Amino acid sequence: MQIRSLFTGLLILLASLSGLGQITEDSLRREENPTLDLLSDLDKKKAPKEKKELKQPKNVFFGIKSRKGFTKSPAADRVTMELFYYLPDYKDPNPYVPHVAWYNMRKKELQLTGQIDKETHRLLHGPYQRLVNGKLVEEGYYYMGTKHGRWATYDANFMLLEKLRFHMGWPKESQITYYDVNRTKVKEVIPVHYGIKHGDYYQFYEGGQMAVKGQYDNGKPVGKWMEYYQFRRRYKKETQYPADPFDKTTEPFTLREWDDKGTLTFDKEKEDKKAALSKF
Image 1 (spheres, rainbow, N blue to C red):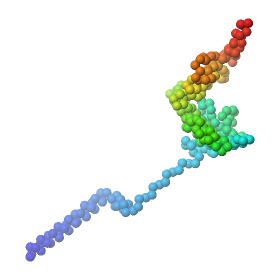
Image 2 (cartoon, helix red, strand yellow):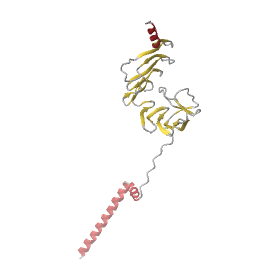
Image 3 (cartoon, helix red, strand yellow):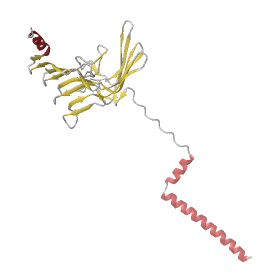
Image 4 (cartoon, rainbow, N blue to C red):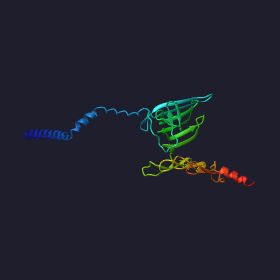
C-alpha cells in the first residue's frame, strides 16, 4: 500500500516538472521573438482595409497639367465643334516637326500655321475630338502640339475611315536618322504606316534647316519634291514625280532650278516652249 502511494506521488511530481518545462520553453521562445504575441493578437482581429488607389489628377496627360477648351463653328447646315486640351503656359514646340497644333486664346480658334504669339498661343496637349452636327468624325491625342498615339477618322455613320499611329508628330513606324548620338538633331524622316512608306518625307541640314521635302504614297514618291539651300530657305530644285503611285510609265523630271542667290536658272515650261517654237 505504501509502495503504491509512493509511485502515485512520483507520477504527480513528474507531471508538474513536465508542465514547468513547457512553460519555460514557451516563455523563452516568446522572449526571443516578441512579435509572436503581436501576431497572435492580429490574428484575432479583422484584417485592416486596403488603402484606395490614388486617382489620376484631373486634366493631367503624360505627366503635364492641361486646360480644357473648345471651339464652335456654325454654318448654314453644318456645325463643327472641336474639344481639346491645351497647355496653360507657352512652350517651344519641337523645331523639326512641321505640323504643330496651337490654340489661339485671343481668337478662340485652332491653327496649324501662321505667326505665333507667345502671349496668346498655347500648344494642344491631351485628347482631341472633332464633331460635325454632334457626330464624332475625328479623334486622337496631342503631345506638346504634335500628334501622338492613335488617330482615327469616321464618316457620318461612325464607320472607321482611317486609323493611323503617331509618335510625337511622326508616323509611329517612321525611319528616323540623326546627326548626333543623343538624337537631338534630326537628319532624315522616312514616313512609314503599317510597313509601307506613306506620308510626308523630310530631310534636314545639321543646323535644323529644311533640306528636302516630299511625299510618299503606297511606297512611291509622288507629286512635287522640293530641295532647299541651307540658309534663308531659298529654293534649290523642284522635281515632279507621278501623281499616281501606280503609274509606271511617267519618269520623274526637274521642273525648276535656282542658284544660291535665288535666281531661276532653269524652267522646264519655258524650255519646252522654246523647243516647240524652234520647230517652226
